[in-house]
Amino acid sequence: MILANDLKRQYSLHASEYENKAVDVLRSGWYILGQEVQAFENEWADYIGTDYAVGLASGLDALWISFRLLGVHEGDEVIVSSNAYIACVMGITINGATPVFVEPDVYDNIDADKIEAAITPRTKAILAVHLFGQSCDMTKIMDIAHRHHLYVVEDCAQSHGNSWHGQKVGTFGDVACFSFYPTKGCGAFGDAGCITTNRKDLADAFRVFRNYGSEKKYHNKVVGANSRLDELQAGLLRVKLQYLDEMNGERNRVADYYLEHLRNPLVRLPKVRPGADSSWHQFVVHTENRDALKAYLAEQGIGTMIHYPIPPHLSEAYTYLGKKRGDYPIAEQYADEVLSLPMYNGITKAEQDTVIEAVNAFRI
Image (tube, rainbow, N blue to C red; front, side, top):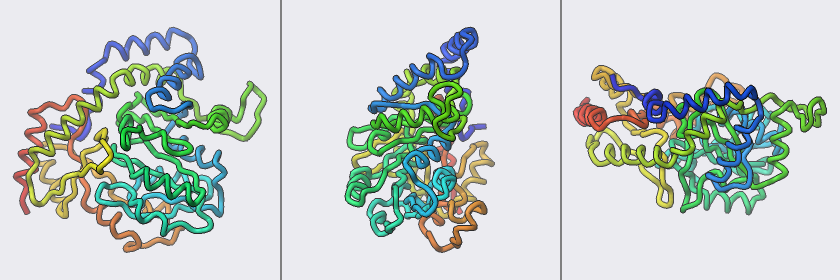
């Protein structure tokens, strides 16, 4: 069986280093907001290219706290891609704000040329979701934001280490949100997240908010949250960060091999936007025969995933928005046709050849 994602392979590449770090943290006797968190925050900020990084408990926390601290609340609108993962939308609506959906382009990310038409007097921010490991068109997005005086929040959960015209994502907006869920490029071994920013006031506010709104123990400045990156995850992330560029390079070689050898007219291969590179968080193909292809590959012992089968506006959770099928036809089409092929560090050439042979042999 070839899994859609095999996390144990990635762990095995540097198992002794992870295990030694875990033991060091356990023996330290300090498990919350200690030296490992501080060191990881410094190293991650340095890697991304921002002045500050603040560790949090999850990527979703990074999103909703970002909008909270930027003053986004009920009555405000935030522009977001209509095919984004639902957590992106939750980061907006947890604060009482309204998501305004904009359709994706052929690169599976928000179509920047359609953003301006979605702006209203209530628009307060743009959420730029770098989906599947590839950057949005940040030149156009930042130009629109500056002209309309809007905040920009980047969702970099799936884009650890990739760039737009040589500048790493996570450095463009007012704040950028990262998830370190285990499947991510620099995945932790549990839930974890962080934000990056060049604004000291925001970084300071995040540090207070994540710890019950407390800057000093038992002195609470605001009503905050319990959203702290723990020492164990921070330590393990420090180990993995040393190898992130190497792992991204491997994933690019895997993607290049797929792109070179997959040849089936029923299957549209992913495209990389000019000016962008990709960390290939997923290798997402499109086909009108998605469900049949998925079933066929399963019969061949090949696992796949669908990212994502239900666009946010059709989710039961967002019935109250009053959206219906047909409102965002491109997102709905993508939800019916996207399929993620096996993509992970440690996949073998023989396993890829098996996937390629099966996809190329698929017929209706």
